[in-house]
Each structure stands twice: as C-alpha cells, then as structure tokens.
Image (tube, rainbow, N blue to C red; front, top):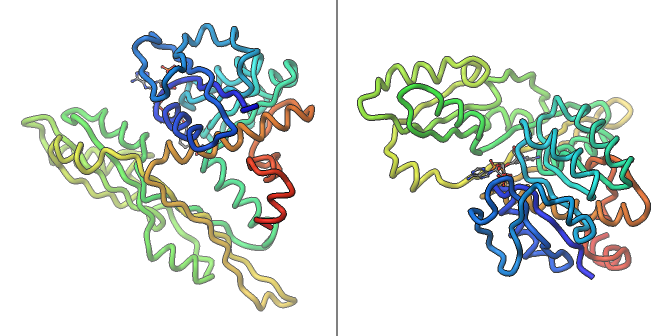
Length: 328
Ligand code: NDP
C-alpha cells in the first residue's frame, strides 16, 4: 500500500510536494490543507480534496505523513508541534539559530503522541548539513566553507520592495568565483563576507521615483546589503516577468583538510547544487524524508529527528537487497 501523504499549506513548497509525489509511485497524495478558503485554492492533482486547515485532525487515520509547507518565520514554530499531535510530520524549518528550540517543541509533542517529527529538511538546512557533517567526520582538522547561489533570496527581495518608490524587485546572491577557486586550491583562505558573495538587484521603480535615492538606500541597507558589493539594475515590469520569474538557487559546501603523519596530503570535498527551482528541489528532499519518517515510526521510533538521525536506506523506495546490488 502506498504511503499516504497530506500537504499542509499550499504555496511554492506545497505545489512542489504535489509534483514530487507524481515522481514517487510509492507515495499517494491524500489531501491538501489550507488556512485560506479551500474553494479558492486550485491544485494540480485531480480527485484530491483541498480542505480547511482547521479540519486536519479529522484526517489522523487517513494520512501517514503530513508534510508542512508553511513559512519558517511564524507558521512552522506553531504548526509543526501542533500537527505532531496527530501525524508523523516533516518540515523545512530553516531559521538556523532557532533550530534547537524548534527541536525541543516538536520532540515533546511527537513523543507524547507517539509520532516522528522530522524537522529542517531541504537543502540548507538539509543536504548541505549532511555534507558538512560527513566531511567533518572524515577530515577532522580541516576548514569548512559554504557558498550560496547563484540564486534568488526571498528575504532580500522583500527588503528592497519595502523601499519607497519600489514597485517590485528580485535579488540574486552570487558566489565570488575567485574566492571559490582559492578555497578549492586548498589554500584555506580567511574570507570576509564581502569576499565570498556579491548581490545583484533587479528593481522596478514607480513612475517618477528618484532612482539615485533608491539605489543609495539599497546598497547602504544594514544587515542586508551594506557588507556586500551590490549592483542595482532598474528594469521594466515586463523584463522582470520575462527574465526573473523563476526561483533558482544552489550553492557549494566545501571542506579542505589534510592527512598523513606530517599533513603532507591535501584533500578537497565538494558538494554542489545548481537548482532551476529552489522549492521543487526542496520538496523532492522533503518527500524522501517523509518516506523515512513513516518507516522509522513503523519500527517504533518517536520524537523529533533531523537529517542527522536518518540512515540513508530509509530514504529510498528500493529495499536493502536492491540497494546493495545496485548502489554500493
Ligand atoms: P510561500 O510563501 O509560497 O508559502 C508559505 C505559506 O503561505 C503557504 O503554506 C500558504 O499557506 C501561504 N500562501 C501561499 N500562497 C499564498 C497566497 N497566494 N495567499 C495567501 N497565502 C498564501 O513559501 P514557500 O513555499 O516558498 O516556502 C516555505 C518555507 O520553506 C520558507 O519559509 C522557508 O523557510 C522554507 N524553505 C526551506 C528550505 C530548506 O532548504 N530547508 C529551502 C526553501 C524554503 P496556506 O495555504 O495555509 O494559506
């Protein structure tokens, strides 16, 4: 029998989960839940109901894993512990500094109800975290580097949109190629924020707006742009729609280190992602971890888990014998 999945919250990630389920025949979409009027939310799958978020608990015997697709800032800290009372849950909580407290809240709820609550799944946190951990275990005396991009940063795009005279904006974070090369060469460079990434902004201004003033406000904005070399391009609304509608992202996790009695041999471990669609890729990771959450719970495990707690074989639709034959 297929693993029955629910989607809680239907934004970019919600839609991405729907697409990912289509690519995983051992999973079945049971229902989509939204806080908005369910009739106003149109989904891709035929014959699957969109239901009110308030009715989710009524589905506790119909859904094996609920995948939470709300935002990290205010939705998930409330939704994940709440829904762990009724379901195995998976979320993509990405406020790194607050992961310990989120873990505690989900752990308490999931242990009490006998479910697995898998948090902070995606690419960062998620696949990047796993690769940082593997590389640290293998090269304990080395150096870690994470570069992000080229990709759209939603937070930085929003910050530009809040400036007076700005109609719309898209911001790309771009790794500095020379910094990447210095890291890959094994030189272990000490890199400042400015040396690692640049920021490129595409801005649609209101008619008659003072462009010089907008640009100045962007490049000097503390926390967001002041510490970076930032380029601002003013473009038309049509150009923004035509050339910047996607949500690409990606990045690099690199660890350099040495082995041998006198550290005579150098090693570089690199994991990189180049994603056309950040939410669709994140969703593909989430469904693999939903499979793991279901299996781990079936084996009697409960409480909060992160990607560090999941053995790789739990993620695969193939069984152990197939994996040993084809992947080892
Ligand atoms: P969205 O803003 O698209 O969706 C978030 C929620 O907003 C939805 O669940 C939905 O809830 C509501 N919503 C969506 N569209 C509308 C609309 N038109 N009107 C009103 N409400 C709407 O966020 P994303 O799906 O892009 O991302 C969700 C979170 O995923 C991010 O906050 C981020 O923290 C995390 N993330 C994590 C990654 C990782 O690597 N770990 C990578 C990428 C993202 P409802 O249906 O209930 O209204």
